[in-house]
Length: 181
Image 1: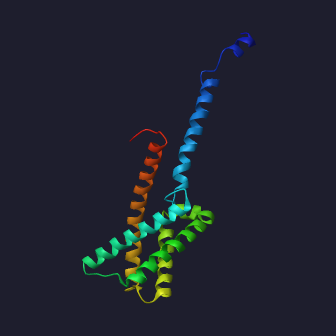
Image 2 (image 1 turned 135 degrees about the horizontal axis):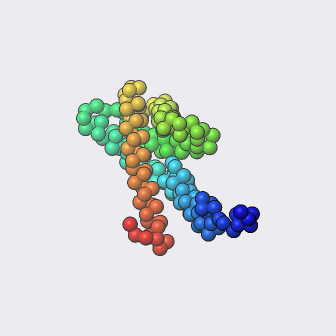
């Protein structure tokens, strides 16, 4: 066998240069596509002001649903006034967003490993703090009411937030000439 013959014969297991370039392009496209869901891990919108407004609206709606459902089955979770409710949800939105930014920056691995339970416990602590600060107008009827509210609120908010992200993502694709879905 001639050693030059081995150089001319290509190994069928090795990809060609064209295949490598195509794989590199595909990898770049996948990387760009994954950037959107990662950046929207807890953000509803890339613009933080819009995110805060959407977050406030979602928190008002979801908390009203949870409190209304509890009152509808004659198991009220809270004693509230209109002003106390408005201040409580406003404080929840602002403090929780600030704390979540810090958690995503410094505790991302723990948050992922806890599957969201850490976020719920942080929310319980924030709600307890708001309960202590406002005292009148935003008061839970007990520790179990606080836990029930926080867990149901968190589950419904995750569902609602995912639908909002999907809607915003779909709208952005159609606005910039993407495919209609």
